[in-house]
Length: 152
Image (tube, rainbow, N blue to C red; front, top):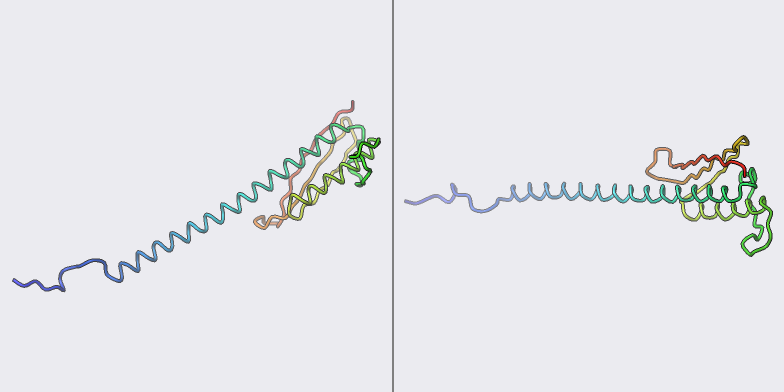
């Protein structure tokens, strides 16, 4: 009895190999896309953490120098308060704003900051930090912290 070699299957054919290659390629593209999204989410989470820390830092500065009040919503100034010179509460607030705004710009891409003061009992401060985020719909993300600091 002679068997025809046409009826027997021997190994993989070219079509099966190409199908397997396509399936593996699609899987690898999917893995690469997930990896890219993971990196983007990690970057966004990092910047959000930095923004939360920066707003909390300014809130602590305001709590320590609460006498300055509305000066934190004013302009910044290099008053040499780091060198041990005597500074008034308003001068210290302007100096802290200068240093803090520099940190916001250094640590966040396109970082901008704003502090709003609302007098009252107790006075209210709104601390905002904004930065560029390519993955955001508006192109930027904002962190806002509202605190009330009672008088001493």
